[in-house]
Image 1 (cartoon, one colour):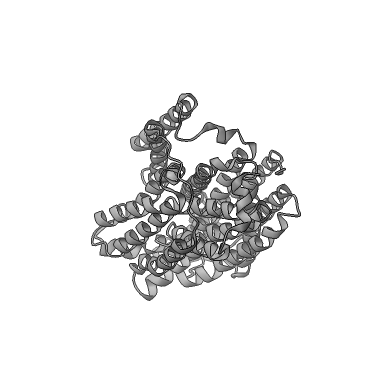
Image 2 (cartoon, rainbow, N blue to C red):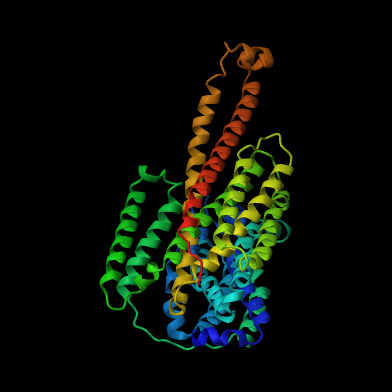
Length: 498
């Protein structure tokens, strides 16, 4: 047993430490989705267009993705506690600056800085929870951490919509101030100091990894706007992504002090865990990206109603995580992962049967089942992925774990979005092909449309648009179901901790 493991049971104020770092974690995770619903309100105030306002989201995502892998080096160089406190201060300060932004340029700059400061909060919070808890309580610790990670994106759009409608879009950022102050005071008072381990900085490795990550995030974010590989811009991003990752992988194998130690990937559990968490990233935010516009566009739900209907999904996740935090000690974590994936696939199968005429019951029921399933996957996965990894690699590993989850989210959202857009066009063309004056069914049900009445034809076109969109959403849910089922065999690769 290492000195760190021996000292873990004697950590003082473990509960207050957990509360403080989880407040900071939820604050940071909320900001990945809370601003989405406020974009239309920002457009007029900041003098932006529909095309340029998306940089409010892109700047934050790209900055956070690039800096996240630096967490391990920064934690060793300056200390985990010190880095965490600086991250909270910087995140809150830049959040306030975002709330006071006067034009699009200032907002993008402040969001970029917000992403830079916030990047280390999530991986460090996971590291702290693994450090201050003995191995037998790692499952419960990861349950607490996972609840914040997964519930945050779910309640973000609801909270953002309520703040925007009740007050102003600026309160989407101002809300971080009280939460950040409490998180900072608690962390400053109770977080234990860690030993600094200065190490050389691999500038070349960091630069190559940043190139790959930044280019990929830009490609995923901009692809839908410029019609993907029909645009030269996307081809440039794709080439830079491949070149950056390929040269980075080659570089770390041959340099003496690499930016990321390749021995991390030799741990089978951690390497498999990265694949799993990528899939979870795809599933979690993809469904969250699809449901709100579907409920608004097809079922005509207002923002607040959408939030209330989706809230049970978060409840299911929290209940699942609270239970699985204890189950992971007595049941094989691999069995829990498989069960969670099966529940998630079941929920997506039910979602593939949604219709424009349904009430809220199927949405709530499938949301609860999906929340339970994702919770059953996330906690044992987060526990077993680090169970056999050397503690000295922990800060680098948690930052990589968070990075891959975020990349999975970006990839998932891009895939379902492009499929949705293209399938809507295809389905609309197929459905409208039967609307002709010679169609006997049309002449019987709507004679005015059969004779070319503009108002009648407009009404039918609206119905066709809704049906085409609904079919496209269902196709996306089917795709996500098969991705979930395809991930199940990976559980066989995981091995239990000794």
